[in-house]
Length: 296
Ligand SMILES: [Zn+2]
Image 1: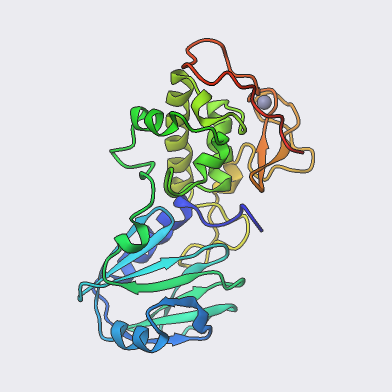
Image 2 (image 1 turned 90 degrees about the vertical axis):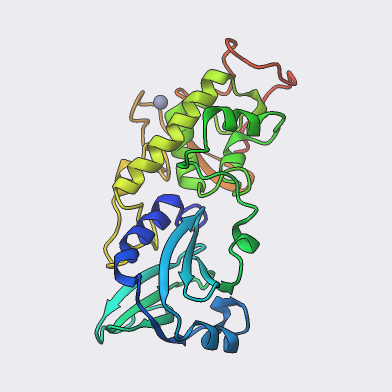
């Protein structure tokens, strides 16, 4: 299960495809089949404060969906491991594992489907109380190779762990970290600060290319992710290394893809295209410590 959760491209797709159905709609009620899905405020307050509000917009920050309301409050949804938001019209039955329904006028329902029940809804006055600590948006104008270089300086953690750390950069998880590192030809256990400026530029480009491509393919339906209309995304068909177990070969050089564990996360890479020893050229001064052997 770990590592197959919705990431930026999946959440961005949900935002894009939900938006036209919900903006301007009024919340006529909420049905909770699993009260634990509401983390803030109390369930009672959640009902009373959300009902009657109009949805004025929907944005994404990292892996969070932020619904703006006519009051100054925002509804923040995090799908976590297995959540999806599905649009239902008229009297359509809630799909299996629906934990909550947000009822809107014009007979529209948002079904929060979540088999494993890790998803979270919060109604808060200030979105920053939840998303304020997130790192930069990788597709935002402010995310440049220079910013990435600054954030990598002095970081000893493996680059794979940094890319999936939401306070380092927002929205990337296990799948797209593996894909970006493969595209940039960087070994996942390299310490952040060991990357050369040429590698940082490659990584920056790879992150944006991999994410834009996955958004273009409407996200990756490896496990439980569905688009709001219930159809799967196709981004996983483009994966070069992520989840390529079972003797899959590197699409570039034909070497078998390897799986290691980096900070408890299954990590896929090509040992030939992503050599562990950093290139000598263009390396910034670093600690000189050897990189760690992969934990098998
Ligand atoms: Zn290869």
